Picture 1 (tube, one colour):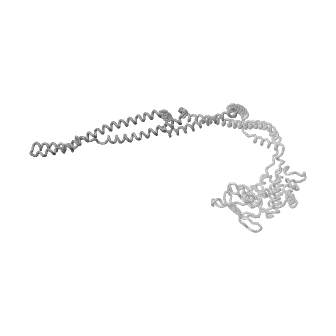
Picture 2 (tube, rainbow, N blue to C red):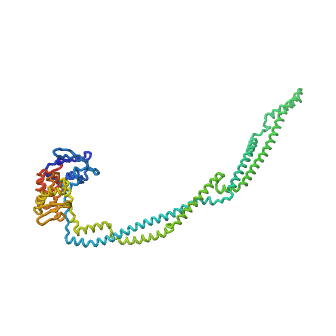
Picture 3 (cartoon, rainbow, N blue to C red):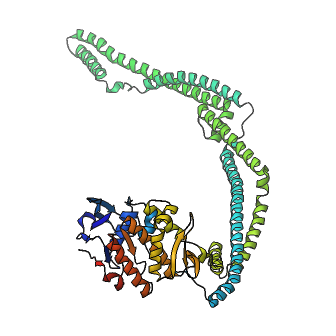
Length: 535
């Protein structure tokens, strides 16, 4: 596969598109160009384009056919790679870490540092153990406090219930309360019946009394009759018409009838007043008799703030409920107090507080100058021991790119050695100027090289020889299988002689039609390559 063009557009058309046109051979880009990062994302799903957001359009040619590929780059955008990411170690070369070689002074310094770190680790481990125990004790104190709070809540609930029941319990109820209430109901019914009858009669008497009394002296009929009678008598005596005197008899009859009616009404009012007084006395006597008969119940009404039997019975129900709630609260408090953990809570809390104080004092002494966790100190100790024992040097990173090269070539390790081992050895000899004659590998593990000085495993090689061994294997596979091959400054820190030999190898590889995209600022690599810049 050959990459012909790469175009990147910002989101929503922001900014001008960035375009790179690539040829078939060795193309180099500057150290600040993002092209290699975009291609690593496209091919292997790498993170070289982190921080970019937009649309990546790539035109590729494969088996003589061109096709366009689009990928959206974003902070949370998953990219489907065009190639197996497991091949990245053989197609995308970045600098190998340089082996660390300890000087005698550094080894002596690290050896002297170990006892100090071990003492610090011991103190920090003890500090963390005490801290863990302290947290456990604090949790226990929290549990004990919860129990103490449970007792306090039970006591508070009892006090509240007793306070609610106190006003009800302050009223002394007679033993024959039900009989008294029944007698009160009967007496109240009798009084109500008599009172209704007496008040009905009293209302009638008062109504008659309230009627306007007749004043005969203001009655026109009275004076008219007297006037007619006196006039008739005067005419009969003083004139010749003696017969007119007889008219005085009916004339005087009318006033006489009016006066008799007034006398009768006055007598009836006096009788009604006496009847009213009698009825009022009967009502007062009825009230006195009822009050005397119901004195005990009325006193209960006054003590309980009620006015009727219905209200008093509701008060009794509330009193029973309050009393029952107080009994339940007392029983709950007694049950809580009877528990062993509650009885021992105060003593347990005091003991735990003493243990907490003891550990806090120990921790105060150990914490002076402590700023790292035991895990961090242990990691530093392990790293120092690893460096002193050479484990870091013995770690073989070449196994990864042997497997990647086999995946690149589409075969297993044995087939890769059989088909491309000779070509890789030729390239290794050329890159190391004959120092190492051949390279090989087994069914597992990493690379081994052979030269006049004998056989050496990959971890035993110098940094320059490691890069040469890796490049020999990768270049042999690329020569056989084609590109693209991404080089992200893997050789920039090598000596000039190595770089010159690598430049010749890259020129030869590009001449075989292998597409190489190389990010570097080394003039020797850029001299015989096509420099690509954004358009």
